[in-house]
Image (cartoon, rainbow, N blue to C red; front, side, top):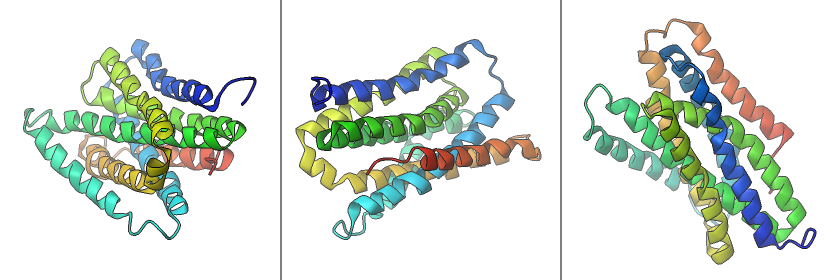
Length: 251
């Protein structure tokens, strides 16, 4: 224990702190939000999601799996197929003009909820091993979550959610880290054994959102010939890559 605190108490405090990062969107409550600014965030979000997938989630899943997990990339393919069906379902409840944007908002909430859930499991697992390692992992997760949550909030605004509602839904999604931590303490062995499958599924969700919704949105917009809208895409990639070097996840 650190200063008399149990691993359980430290884990709860850490995951609540990480969940609170989702409230960073409050800075957008008092700024102008227009079409061009929204597209800049769409571009940034696409870069963040793809970099998170290929530089964090999939490599981490492979490392954790070793040689005993089988082809867990099936979960990636299944998640992409599932999101395809879910998006078709969501389209049925909205007009043709707004269905694409609305679907993007719901899909990012689902994908980010799974991602936060995994972060909670990872934080809890490391606190169980060593509280000092848990604190290091929490700081690393927090550093990676900042650009992710800003990007997610931008997508929700782009999808037509009001700013207060987007902030609330993003925070509720962030609280799934606490749920992941609690379930890890309750069912540590089976959850940790299948963690690569959760990671691979989340990777599939992020690939689908970026490739099927966000990037095509940029190509469809009337700004598609403006190269400056490509800059946030690569900035998002570079930011996640840089954070991975400066604050890598503790394994």
